Image (tube, rainbow, N blue to C red; front, side, top):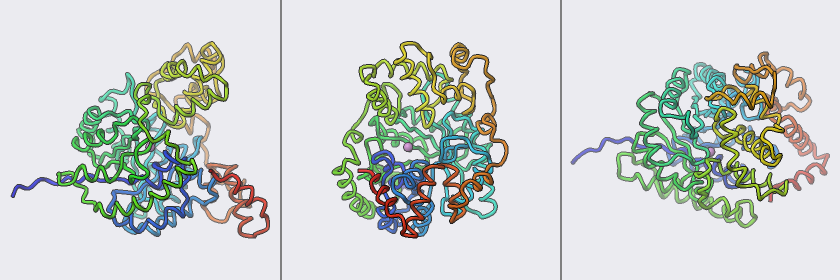
Length: 478
Ligand code: CO
């Protein structure tokens, strides 16, 4: 009997984070998650992704749930499975850079409450914006023997993004002390043969495990995984079938079946996966019926490949143009996006650079003159406040938009003056609401949303202010 050398591929299940973020605007409540955790814990997943910026924000804002409490409940249930989260570099889970002490405190609390793997990305791929989070994770790992950091490269296309660039970046990530690398293809731009090339190159240049994250948006994702696994990728991100495809990930069961009997066999039990799918199917039906899940996001959107614009960015753009009664400018704006992107150093398009570039492109088209007006965020990008872009920015645009202003070449926390600890002053601002250490961090990230939540929580506990509860129920998504 010939023996095949086993190299089982791992799967990270995304149904508790990215899949519902992509398909139902991150609205899955904890009560839907908990009854199936026990079963999910038996699959043997490489990890379950369950936390991130959008899940944190939506928990507080729309679901009126404490995201820390959700994490603790999931940790209780997942006895054998690693829990993973997504982390926006120096922005943590928020939208501005924080001083290092806040980054350290957030990493420490995340791991203490149950996170095992922290996936960290930066919207410009400026690795300096990731170092504090990696160092914080390594510090905890040393102290407690738990926690690992994964640096995600925001995948994008453009002159600067050669195989040499990705190879060099992978080496730097290894030197930074991260435990693994993720290729984060948020728009579904990575096509199968390119994926094979990229994985092979990374494998040749680093010893770190490589995980691949993509979205089904453009329709190529399962084929991309097939080629990437053949090229040696270690883990792929998938979603259980009722929450797969469309703008979400390839289906877990499909990838498991694809590799069955090969050297890449996951070894997962399809009958357990079928029970998990059966559990989520009625919830999917409910979401479709209520309109929370739209059939619009379930098909293939080939435009993402044509325009290299993430699906979420396209739908934002359409609604912004609608508001301005300028839907006829759609094509013009689409053509302006790559030009704006070039002018500001060709960054990847991912939160928040995607919104910054998209909105500026709309301004340029609607004003009838390029850069006649610029958004505050676009100016900050030109000032270097988000960090450095891979390519130089267009000097003419800089001279027009921020004439004579100083520009920073530092990492984002320093460029924006966050060089001193800021946690104590944040705590002083919110101390009347504090019931647990974690509340300070919720407030640091989303001050207004967290304050509203704390008031709601207090009203629930004391039962005095029913009007708050009613008002909040009114803001539940439909
Ligand atoms: Co994603």
